[in-house]
Length: 228
Picture 1: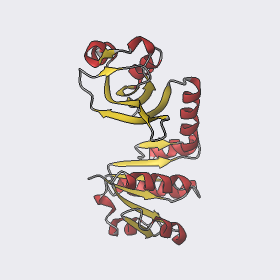
Picture 2: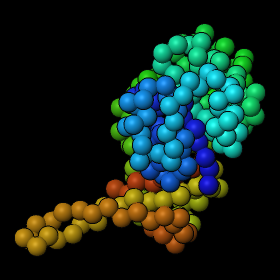
Picture 3: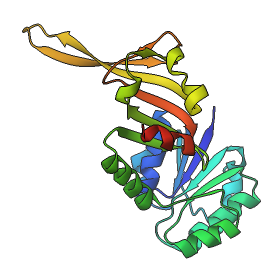
Picture 4: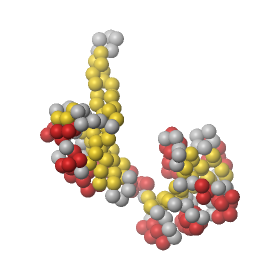
């Protein structure tokens, strides 16, 4: 099981820590603020009050056993730079850091950060994308190259099986799940809908109008799908 350390429990850091914990991952949360740590107790695997700029303290905490660190220090740029440098020197394979500016981002890359994130910008871009294309429900960037998109099936593709659609051959994307709303009759005679999710659909599964496809592929190929 993957292990994550989240350093800095502001709004963004605490949200990341909780989300990873809900997915069943082992999460160590670190912050100097005792109140923030108390809020994480019982949610994450371990919550520790400490100054993360203390490299010796990080090492004693067993930080080198973790796969990925997320550094979300909102107070000072200097602290996030020093923590990033310490984590890389201790040998962490992947360090993801929240940046406050382009200059901050450049310095973080110089000291070894593997990925830089601008939470507000990424949220804004995702919102803009969903507004610009109502077909798009969500987009998850897995890396600079690959992503997962969730979108309503284009009309030209409905009432066909996945074998007939040949998504991999034609579009170079994989359909990893299908979301579908099915009508149900309630005890009072009225009609409602329940959502069915077909995970890992096979070639014989047919897609119908209103289906939402969850697809994995290169970002450039997913963009082509959006234009259908």
